[in-house]
Image 1: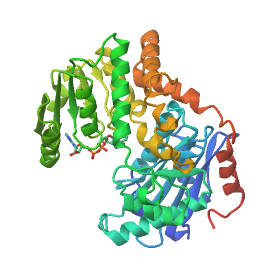
Image 2: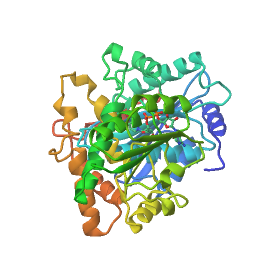
Image 3: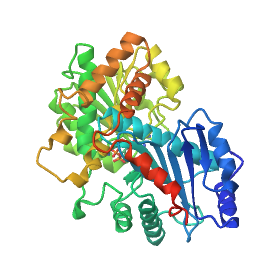
Image 4: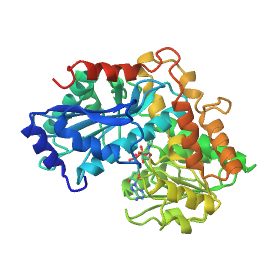
Length: 432
Ligand code: NAD
């Protein structure tokens, strides 16, 4: 599949007059089946994959009439509720990378949502940017996101989208124009607003749990933070409030560095501008390392040089190779708090927007408090305890716990989204 490019798939679709199609998992045959026989090759690829495919309930696609943008909704598991996860607008070299990314990210959302005790399943939207056009062009984006909303409407609610990296408030507003099946809508029309501050508190709660597991506290600790953006800035403030000894931080953007330095003037903050390829912040002499910039920074090159005994930060997908790097960290005796455990507050904040808002909302705050079983603090403790008892790496343990939770059915609606998927397949409305 690596040898098939996205434009080649677009040609196949156009030649066969296909503008919407799906790949559905048949639980009886345990095989994925395509909506069109001409697309059997896609199902064959997925059926032969054991890395990213895990009985995903359904994958749905459309090709936009203008601009030839391939849009997808990858629905992994919906026992806990509608598949929820953000939509990204990305460029892919080939079809295999696209399908793998969609399947992997959807599975990740099942884990994140279930571990957080949310009554949502896991899914992800992935749209392929057409490099013939300027990605920032307003008309292009407006069209792409509005069409994505129409596509979600066609899906009848088995997948509910949200914001993802690179998605703006305006993009979400455009989706909302054509579907109700989105969260993270702008605050001005009833959305929940930027979740970065609660996300920073989630990271803080996980750090405190990891330290408590060792019988320690944040008092006097040295914390190194990669990235000084929307999550890192409030995180640094919370760390000083907890009397850490020092924060060392780095960002590639000098304006960001200067503004954070100004905000924490008088505090023991050592902050500097760094280059994108310079990961030396990861190797600082410190107690806790908090990656809050980009993913894949924990890998065979970086792990051997890390001095921190705890890694806990908001950046998504920190492990470059999940199994290899999870184990490498455990082998070095470093406590790694999985990102999908501690950075959940983004999805927590917007997942239940339709239920309205109350001050100090318990449905939000309980994730950040110490007592709730599914809260960040208790979940971190439970994962670290099980990892110690079983000798398994932390991320693996968190996935095992999340998978178990993802098998529980919604207390009111049961496995309704599977019925939605079956309805989409049984009548031809989606593809017609
Ligand atoms: P942000 O864009 O506001 O901040 C990221 C910062 O990292 C930027 O200031 C950027 O200049 C800097 N950066 C990029 N590459 C760098 C590098 N190589 N070295 C040092 N700095 C670098 O993003 P954010 O909202 O603060 O999110 C941070 C991370 O957490 C992202 O990976 C994001 O996907 C993840 N996350 C965020 C939320 C949220 O609520 N904002 C929720 C879940 C996960």
